[in-house]
Image 1: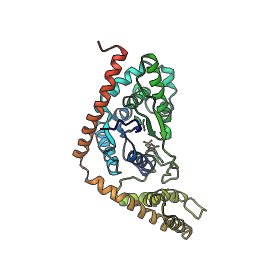
Image 2: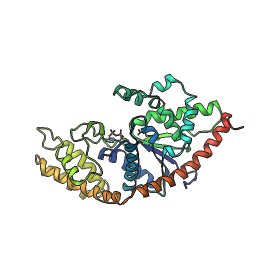
Image 3: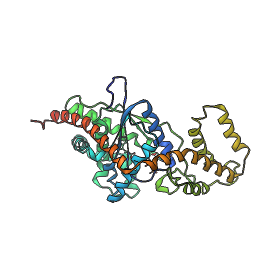
Length: 329
Ligand code: ADP
Ligand code: TRP
């Protein structure tokens, strides 16, 4: 169970189960989360009901849920500090979302960047997508969360959660803590094989848990540009990978060796790409072995256990909320 020591800050984060992770997700989200949960306690939620705003195929959703849970476990999340669960297992989330929706206005929700961006990209403007920020506010507020580690794109959603807490506390009584976002240190955006931001929507990814030949093929296709002696996209990715392998170059020698690799092999793109493939393999192989050994049954067990613990916290909070709003007679 989570510690309730006053000095401990409680973390809460979530990830939508929306497909195979790439190394941009690893350096931008998964690795920072694993690191934060080494020192702090909290909850990691697989946002399957949020994913329902876009994923409409049952077997895809089922596979993605299992897959993202395996990714967290293989990346080394510390289960002594983290409760991992899926949103749909704790019905208090959708229940509280409704109550919060009754406190905010349509124009307020219409200002959400994520909603506007998704609709601008042609996604269906379903009501779930519109109410998305209040379900996310419920996720966060149910657990007296102090800190929400997220990427820059989620900053406004955490502001919405704070606003929902303030509105509830003002309308009824002091009930919810106001959470603070912690924007992951900007691991410079990881470039994809075409030099744009690596993203599953651009089909320019290096899969995190792909087979070695899949990864090699992706690396070999990285655009190197013309004219420069150093292939900047290869170098940017390599710096992160070598950094992860050497504990962020904690030994000066590692840093020198890496600089020399690039200074002594100017224009030799093939050799540098092969060196990157080798380092990626060193980083990923142990995680891949660990991931392959995790069975679906084990994942389900972790999630059932997580749901039980999350439910205990959420139902206590909801009992208080129900009393405050006047539905407990
Ligand atoms: P995608 O762009 O592939 O759809 P998501 O939007 O699902 O990725 O992002 C999930 C998490 O991974 C977010 O926290 C996001 O900030 C991080 N992330 C995604 N792509 C990158 C990237 N290229 N570089 C750094 N972080 C990234
Ligand atoms: N909206 C987040 C994303 O797309 C996922 C998410 C859902 C979340 N609920 C959350 C993140 C609560 C942090 C806290 O990345």
